[in-house]
Structure formats: C-alpha cells, structure tokens
Length: 170
Image 1 (tube, one colour):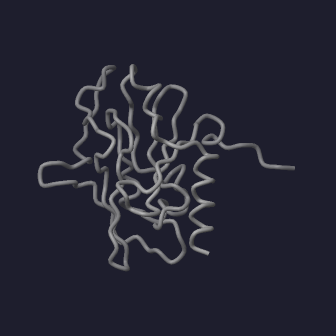
Image 2 (cartoon, rainbow, N blue to C red; image 1 turned 90 degrees about the vertical axis):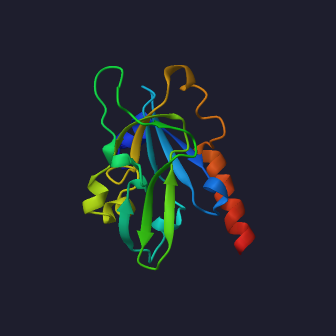
C-alpha cells in the first residue's frame, strides 16, 4: 500500500523557477499554501542537492547593511517585515568545493521568517529540502497573491524542462 501524502504534498502547490538569474541548473521551488503563504526551497535539480556536495556555511547577511536574520515581524499587519522583490537575495550558501550559491526570493512579498535551523545543521537543507530544510517563508501582498505565480512553472512544466536538460547533455 502506498504511503499517504505528506503535509507538503497535501496542502502546498509546487511552483518552480528554473535557472534563476541565468545560472544554469540553479532551480528554486516555491511551495504555495492556500492561505497564500509561500515557502522558498531548493528544487530537486539544484546543484546543492546533487551527490558529493558538502555545505560549509549558510549566510543570511546579504550586504553590510542588510541581514535577513534582523527581520523582526510583529502584529496582524506584519510590521517590520523586510519587503522582497523577485530577485532579492535571501542567503548565500558556500560549499566545501569553493562554490557559492545565492538563493533568491523568486516572488514579491514580505519576509516572514528565515530558517535559522539550517545555520546550525546545514545537512537538513540537503536531506529534507521541502520540509525542515526550507530557506524562508514569504507572504505576498493579498492583491498580488493570484499573480505571483506568473513566470513560474508547474510541476509538469518543470519536469519537461528537466527532461530537455537531460536529453541535451546525453
């Protein structure tokens, strides 16, 4: 008997942004809940999730004046939340092989939280990217919540992109 679907499969719609900012294979996944909350994660094909990669560090310090860890949200209207554009960097992830990857928001909205658990245990980012290894939680504006998925791919469209990628390399 097949296992019942998990919380992620049951309550979230998966959207994909392939080749973010023109970086080949650096795909991001946005899990959109029916209440419009979006969870930013790495897509299955992202180089960080491929065999042999070891994460050395994760840094939410984007610039000298901007740290995603300083984000403090309060109240019903989510005062204090940092506003993000589609190309706003969320964090930088360094690997033991010297490569560095920047993870972007991919959607417009307010930054509700970043996952501080991956700072202490970066391995969960690779082991459970869609659940405990998420990057951040973003809340789009109510009036934009229907349009934020424009420019993102559905699961089926993303699988076609992966198939084309695989066929072009083999």
